[in-house]
Length: 304
Ligand SMILES: CCC/C=C/C=C/C(=O)SCCNC(=O)CCNC(=O)[C@H](O)C(C)(C)COP(=O)(O)OP(=O)(O)OC[C@H]1O[C@@H](n2cnc3c(N)ncnc32)[C@H](O)[C@@H]1OP(=O)(O)O
Image 1: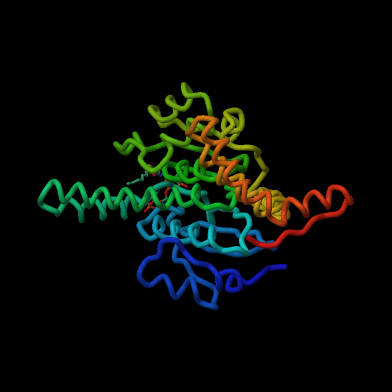
Image 2: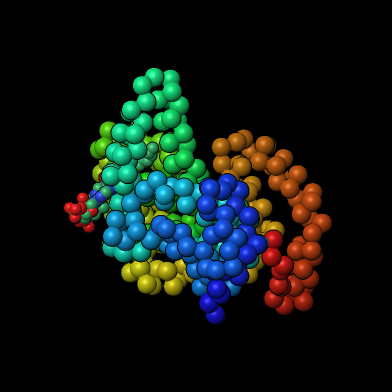
């Protein structure tokens, strides 16, 4: 059954909101992002599609901002338990939109004073970083499905997601050095943690060479390869559906603690989950889960 997006968005409260976006997000009509298409293909499973197929889903300023609004609002939307992200059209994404990048740079270059110019660049970079970090900060698990090219900002995006899947024709490229940039929206921080082999990661970053799907699987960048996008999305929605049926308390607190623990000593992570579970162990969910295990029944959980 396909749930109308409107239903799910009525209650959503975006953490950060741009002028003009409020009416869209609180509207009872299906909200229209300019660069993203959001649907609800299964109960509690949201599908976010990058929707600039003619521009190869390249990242414009609007797209960076909308990624932030979208994932911040889904994080707060109790109907949403799991999110799948993919791209419409020929490629997953061609990375940053050169046109928008050059326009933004030219605008900022016009600021005369170096201190004020630097501050304006800081704001620009932060907006881009926030669009990617919104996936990591979203408390709902995010499953990314890559097809064909996943270039530059695309790698930043998928490494901020919880899981990565791809099609046979997929390829990945940390392309930033080729355009004279040190990657600054997450790849340098997240890719080494995802892949583990820092020698290979540094090779990919310094050479900008392409990684084909088979190598991506061997490196652990993706969990599984599917024959094509249709099958990939169908299968990944099934994985998402199985997560959506679990306790939202358990799943979301797991993500919160995994993210918290990824760059901290084990003792800090253990203390953090101890604090979380001091409250969560008293919730309904562990009781329902344990009771279902004893009675060999399937538990159902309230939204969170
Ligand atoms: C503070 C900033 C933080 C963010 C940093 C992010 C950095 C990055 O993302 S670095 C990576 C930037 N992207 C690239 O370098 C990709 C370059 N493009 C390609 O490699 C190929 O075009 C691609 C594999 C994406 C697609 O190949 P395909 O053969 O399918 O198509 P093409 O004929 O090459 O391209 C079709 C038209 O699209 C235009 N185009 C391609 N990429 C971009 C882009 N990133 N931005 C704007 N436009 C792009 C390309 O020029 C073609 O246009 P036209 O000739 O007018 O048809």
